[in-house]
Image (tube, rainbow, N blue to C red):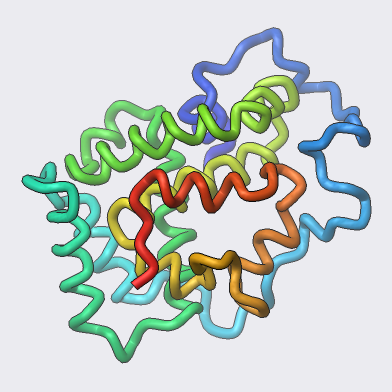
Length: 216
């Protein structure tokens, strides 16, 4: 994943004014996790790291789905594919799809890469990004002032959640997001406990709901 692409697509072109060589962290910043936050911890891999065929199939579908005739049309088409493999889906596969989609969205600043996106994906990305900039303006500003990959990656993850809320909400449910908040012991709970310092309390759920997230 190219960090410059992440920063550019989320916050605009990079600037020579960015303190790219200043690695000082403001520990009092509400956006920066406390020293006790295990923000470098990753869930232990339980299966091979290469994307499974089903994940590749969903990514291909996202890249080819045309602009929806109705707001739920694209979601329905993707849900049909999910239904065909209902017994195969798991939190592990949802994590793999989240990672693959994040990598794809990180190329948004590359016009040639963006040309390969389906219309539904482009619309979902643009809508998610615009709302993320509105609701997570402090994080966006922090990323601009402190262009460290961890903060930009958190922002990219939020935008990816938004795209999934628009096109494949069941994936978020598999990850442990629910109407009441992250399910205890789930990937969503891990994300909140690890990166919660970057996101104002309650704003993530508001973000997903405003993007039309359903919890069926």
